Image (cartoon, rainbow, N blue to C red; front, side, top):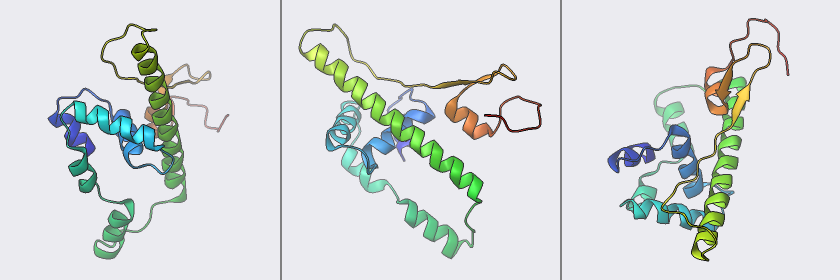
Length: 155
C-alpha cells in the first residue's frame, strides 16, 4: 500500500524508505513524536494518512490467509532469521532518519541552520575484504551472499 502511495505522489523513495516509513507509522518501537512526524511528511505530499493506515493489513491477517486458505506452510528458520535481522536494521534506520531529520528541523527552526525542504536518507555499505565487493546492507541480505568463491563461511 505504501509503495503504491509513493508512486501515486511521484515520490522518488527507495524500497528501504518505504519500509522505514511503514515502520515509523506502525512500529511498536516508534515514539509518538516519530509517528506524527512521518504522518506530517506524508500529509505535506498530499497523502491521506488516516485512509492509508486503515488500508494496511496486519502480518497476522496475511499469515492466517496464506496458511488457512491457501495451504502455504511457514518458511525456513534461516529465511525468517534473515527477515528478522532485516527488520531490525530497518527499524534502526527509521529511528536514525527520524532523529536526524528532527535535529536538523530544530536547528533550522531556531535559525542555526539554513536548509530548504529535505528528506534524510540512511545507507549502510558492507565491504567484503575477501572478494572486494561492496553492497548496501539490505541488498546483500536480499542476495544472501557476496561474490566470494571461498566456499567457507567467514566473519
